[in-house]
Image 1: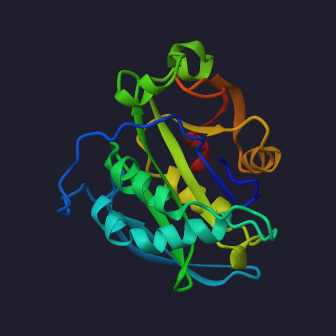
Image 2: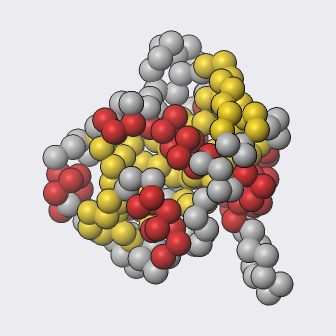
Length: 229
């Protein structure tokens, strides 16, 4: 389920079949291409203190998967006594077996120095397998019909101790700044008002809906990547 928090939202999921695995060895990458590994950058902001942003390679993301899973659980945890805790094990399986394996996977991690937030996503080609999980073809949505490649934002998470400090926007800008596609895509459950409000505040616009082969329709939100220079 998509978390109902303003500083933590995740792409709603269609049922996924794991793609072919890729090598776990670090791969040489272009210095400034999608997924490029850069040294940590220090950021400061009002009430933010010092944070370090790191862009992780596919291999580094798998290596640090437990820390990322801990961040996922903390960001989505509902303080209500009867709330069901986030499924950390299911997140780990999806992260390692599906998300990290996608084309041009990219992840930005913020730390102080422990993980304070992260954002990640991957490329979806018009003729790629990711679209086969939906009943509609991308041509059904005007924004998607104009672009053969989109960057899917799968997770944007901020630890509770760092909420309300602008970190979500900084993570999103850093993530999208390296995407090679002209458009980014986010899927949200229609009834998740807080997540939709957070998406709007970060510049997303609802452009239609996509329906998983097994599931209910999801709101399709897009943003032109040229706005994030």
